Image (cartoon, rainbow, N blue to C red; front, top):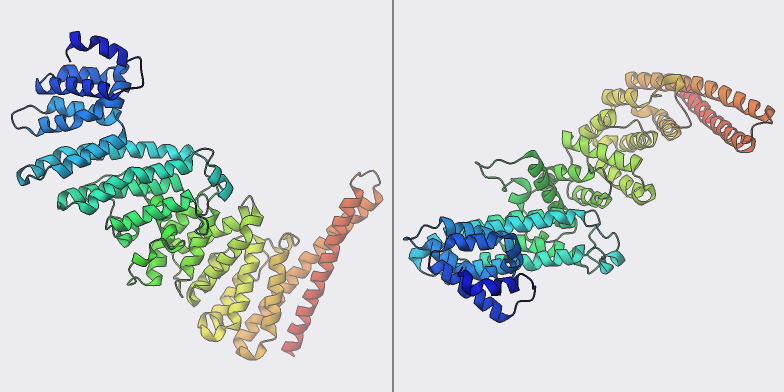
Length: 533
């Protein structure tokens, strides 16, 4: 740049943020002069100088067309021009860069020059995408609004950021739609896909349930992203089921692969639960296939340790409604374990327990007979409440045993031996495990009054199981009643204990509960004795 002519002007630019049209014209004239004269080094030094960054950020993008033309000329060394272009991409406004780069593609209609233009511009466009992706990763630090009111207030401006993302991406979408050159459309489409999937993961996150009944920025964002994927002719099944984001020669870190799976999981939720763009999802895929392919995404979202994504339970429920049979596989086991974690460890239980129970029950019902049998034996939990659900489901399945041979005869006996037990024998805490014990007695009563349904051999085994269980339960009850009775007597006699009233009440309630349980055991024993006469 001619120092004598522009030194005073540059000094003024360095002390102001407000540039008038005359400033832009002077800057571009000076820059074009440097380019025309081949004075690339001085121009590059000016652009890289820290004191000039805000000048370049405001006015530098106008130099792009001239620099691109220089790179395309065959009689010049493009290395320095390319270096200047790379610097401008890092400094200038993303929106201005996009407008100018895409305009360059549109204006070059010479068949002999199109390929060279694409070769020069695509790395620059991809750099802009990478820059924007870096910005998007910062969305992770913005708190997600958890209510419609918070979303409207938008204190941390996350919703405005989502709107800005949609504005940013529109020129690219239009270019893909209008572009006739296959290589351009393919590269741009691939870059768009990665950008959109990253956008699904970071701003949306699914930490708050997107509600289609509320017109909101988050709902609009989710809808637009899914619609754009369809518009740019991306196959939704390929994205979800066939992992198209990696080429054969690509290498990808474990962290990046996990992030891609999180993006796919968010996409699956929007597609199959919120039904966004479901009308373009091919109907040729069977419900069983769709469910099996989505189990990985369900497990991924359920396994997030912050529990903020409890709304994803709806995805499992919706997907389970799609199918009538679920095969017992590793992903199914993991899913059931994650559901159990939600039911037992969720910090705000009143919000999620009811919903978890509904999904868990639906999950069980969708297993086929063999899978149910295996799941009831090995896929349970040490939590008494969860185990009571399993035992109740065994009874329910017995009522429909004519539908499946896995719940009659020898398979039934093997299942009962695994489930009608006290986990710690006579030392079992009956109060803690009351749900399980009550359901076990209910199941035994049902089985014993169904004498005519069983063969002699099976009936003998069933009576033996009932007899062993009730005898162990009686021993456990005797020890528990003795302990609580002794404690109650001691507390009544010890007048120095400040908590005497509350403690005695708790102990008395425990003894009443044990008496009730003992009466049920006696009833089961009487049924067993009568049936064997």
